[in-house]
Length: 205
Length: 205
DNA sequence: CGAGCTAAAAAGAATGTTCGTTTTTTATTG
DNA sequence: CAATAAAAAACGAACATTCTTTTTAGCTCG
View 1: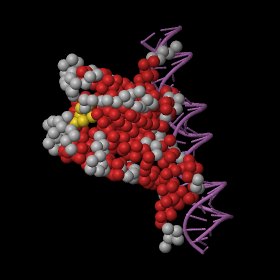
View 2: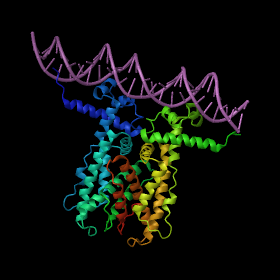
View 3: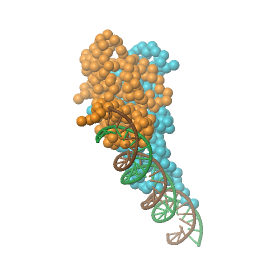
């Protein structure tokens, strides 16, 4: 009885997915053909279909594969390390860039998520995660009173977290499609941005 | 000498492009077949190929067609109408939604722009335009001293405009792919966001 | 007429997937 | 250790679709 380690299979699946993602970043999901992936992976058609039932399954696996980057380490600022929001933004996009390889790939993923509900689940969970990380960071940041007398730091953090998520997304887009995009200026502006004191709206519910 | 007016031809081209865009928003560019477009437009294959040389040409035309929305009217706040940035953000995305039809279409366009340089030209010019509109608005806004003693309103406006563009893009993305997205909270947070006084960085050059 | 259109067919190319075969890997046996 | 059996993995040509585009013939109307 030949024994096949499950790790080997997973490694190969991952390998195929990475090869596919390289192409997806260049040509998008639909324009990347199986023949392309076969060539890029260095395997054969049969081999790939032994690991993935279909192109769709490969796409889905590749998406959830690439979206599992570890952002927790970035968001946890310990005790006395005064990282302003702009700096946090820089660390996030830098970390994402390293994990994803090409940030432009995220545009393809978002576009796919807008069309395919099952891909949306993956992006949703990442979005929620990113929002939570920002929330916990902002709660800390506001609570330190470095800013104005926020009566309720946690409440403010909940309100502003989606905005910072939006700034991350805006960075990714502008970085990908605006030929002259000044990254440092973007970070600097984000650092200088602070919430005003009074937020007298119950927009949440 | 054209027997029928050139306007008629243009109108028909526009009509075809609009029909195609409806499908592009639902299925993306590549997954939309010519047969789909033929059916949606109500015309025949021959008619469409009489107006467009190829599917690629149709896609390009449709993209630059949909990106020509008129945002100037929104950005020009006259004299004494105190519209805070969050409110401006709302007006922008509302206006864009009306012109584009489905905001999710922008995700497809951005993804396409990331892949195809010739599409990028169109998105670039729109991005530059949007940035300029925000710049002129922010210059006004800061100059009124409603905020802190900005020594140079125009300089601040130049710095922060890309950030607001990013917030617009973030809104579009979250609106399209996050199942539970609180639009009003996003606007409210944007209204409460102000730049801090001192921006001691020469990040531009 | 001639320009725009229809409806249908078909050319020609590209796509995703399958399947019989071959190679590689692993465990067992003499 | 060498030989062997068996199963998994990989190959790659072939297949069936699907797609874009072109072509055909016939219709309508200023």
